[in-house]
Length: 294
Image 1 (cartoon, rainbow, N blue to C red):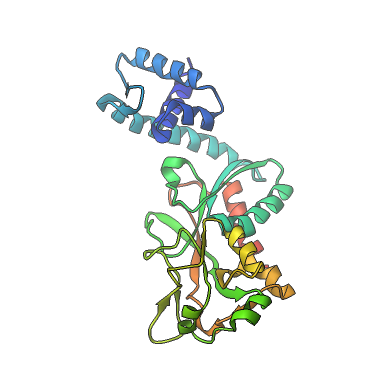
Image 2: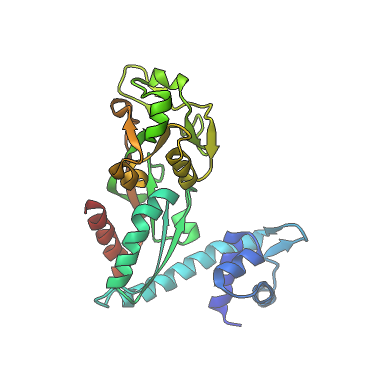
């Protein structure tokens, strides 16, 4: 079997944690993944993975070999990139990670117009709120909200992530309009289930910051679900302004407590220091910045 392909499959198994997940990433069968790993172990004369019915783990030989395989594959990718950089137009596959809400509202539309401009590019857009490892998971670009912890990555500012507090007019007619954060104790609040004491939004504008209510009448793990509940008059909603722009414009939701909104969080684009700035990456960075500015 092709040695380079075997190394690629082995690294995918190590990163994904199972033959099945590696097969999904590589778009081949799990049986074929197993054949490649077996052939590789036979060629090397060493077991790379200890496999049981429930789990698999790297042997000492497998751990060393996985690191060397990554280096080889990076060198091959760099060789391919050296040719790609000679091409005038962006091409190839661009892997992007972005938070769910921001990614759906901002990044996905920008990807669509970028693909229209550059038909030779293919994009894999992963929308989730987990923090991906660009190096280990093979992403070209990540969009992140808030403080940065990856000091080994290039961080380019993109925009500010602003929140808004609002409610449907009929809710405000029934419960009144809050004037200060202290008034929230008398209101029915809606909240996202991922918010906790570590990542909660805090209302500012006064000497003492106060958290958004931790005892919501409705907690949901989906932003669209919370918005629909607010539109139906369920309570006060704290949500990204970008997600509510049209409803606020039409008056279906009314802003409140503007003087106490949480401090906006910075949004950055992240990519590796040592990653060659291929046309597909440089082009999309510029394109996304322009789209956000517009």
